[in-house]
Amino acid sequence: MIIRSEKTSDIKAIEEVTKAAFENHQFSQQTEHYIIRDLRVDDALVISLVAEVDGRVVGHIAFSPVTISDGTTDWHCLGPVSVLPEFQGRKIGTTLVNNGIDLLKTMDSKGCALVGLPTFYYRFGFENHPQLIHEGVPQELFVAKSLFGQMPSGTVEFHDAFKQLSEIEIDAITDVIVDFDPNGMMVDFANPGIESLIEKDALIERSDGKFTIRPLALGKYNTYFGRLTQHMITEMNRGHKNPILTAIKYGVLE
Ligand SMILES: CC(C)(COP(=O)(O)OP(=O)(O)OC[C@H]1O[C@@H](n2cnc3c(N)ncnc32)[C@H](O)[C@@H]1OP(=O)(O)O)[C@@H](O)C(=O)NCCC(=O)NCCS
Image (cartoon, rainbow, N blue to C red):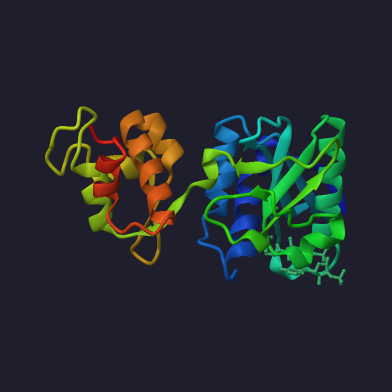
């Protein structure tokens, strides 16, 4: 097995490995490959390693910068990490994590955090730290490992690429995105149409007839819609049911 940094020619294979690894994952919304794609587009994929067996990419791990509310800098997020189902259980995942952390150290990273199953990550020294939180995630699933200096204390925010919203119904998209133009005025449903958002890759139609919104892509297409969608995702995570009302309440829709 070879572990090496990704090349442009690996991008498709990384997507396939990630999709396959998370296909039947209990907590996955199958948006992990979009996270990697959006991190890459935003130059936030600071480490992207592939595991290659017989010339084939069978595993992948991503690392990206995070922000922490206490001002600590140079911390990173580990993930997503994926190994093709038929190659799991051969220590490929372990090697990807260890190599990734070694690389982080050479980049003077001070630490690493992630949302994941602690049973897998304990072995690498990741632990839950009550003073370090990630909003909207059960505390026991949020683990961290300090590489240098003290364990920070505060709220950790991952890159916006992690805020993917999947399984949205077409009506909700219509409500939130298509009804409003950048100046807050009502526009007709065809402008900007759902088709054009799909064309721009901001909206991805899934095989089950639902959609995944990629807020970063949306933000590049139209900053207002991007902002609104980010807000909507945050609010939905907090359990609010009506994103339009909350958007108005919080002043996103002026
Ligand atoms: C998690 C994953 C990357 C591990 O890769 P892998 O190559 O199969 O793992 P390894 O062979 O290095 O396994 C190392 C150990 O982790 C354990 N392990 C593997 N997957 C695990 C999981 N999902 N939960 C808990 N433990 C797990 C293995 O049993 C093994 O334990 P052992 O050393 O006591 O025998 C891989 O199983 C995968 O792609 N899973 C689907 C995607 C995923 O869950 N990603 C992580 C999100 S948190």
